[in-house]
Image (cartoon, rainbow, N blue to C red; front, side, top):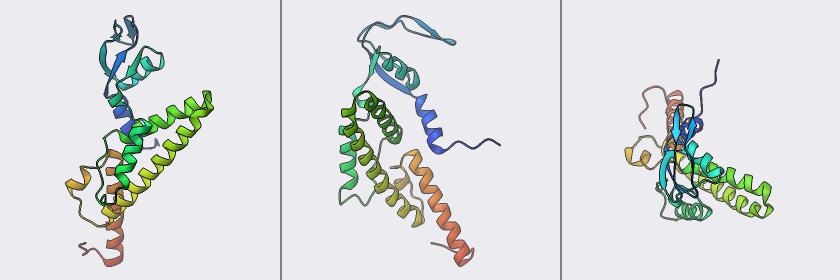
Length: 187
C-alpha cells in the first residue's frame, strides 16, 4: 500500500508547477524538452515559466529569479520581526509559498556552504529564524485550533501547511472533548 503524500509534498508539487518570473542573463537557444519547446530567448528578456523549469535555467546560469519571487535572509528577518511583535496575538499573514521558499532558501544555503564555509553563518541564521517563526506560529495555531470554531478570518491568514495543522488540531481536540464529556459537547 502506497503512503499518502504529506501536505508538504502536495504543496511543493503544486508550487513547483506554478508560474515563476525570471530574467535572462544571456541568450538561450530554442530547446526541446519532451513535447515542449523553450526559447529562443534573448538576454534581458523577462519570461514566465513553471518554477521547476525556471530553476534549471537559473542553475545553468542562463537566468536569475525576480527579487520579489525569492525569500532572502533579509525578508526572513523582516518576517520574523513581524511574528514577534507583542500585538501579534493574531497571526500575521504569510505569503502562500512561505514555507516552500524557506525550504528552498535553506537547501540553497546548505549547497553554498559546501563550497564556501563562510555561508555557514547565513545558514545558521536562516535555520534559527525559520525555527523561531515555525514555533511562534505553531503555538498560535494550536491555541486557535483548540479553542473551537473555525473562522474564515483566522484560516485566511494561514498557509496551506498551516491550515492542515489547524484542522488536525481542531479535529483532535473535538474528538478528545467528545471522549471526555460524551457526544453532547459544544465548545
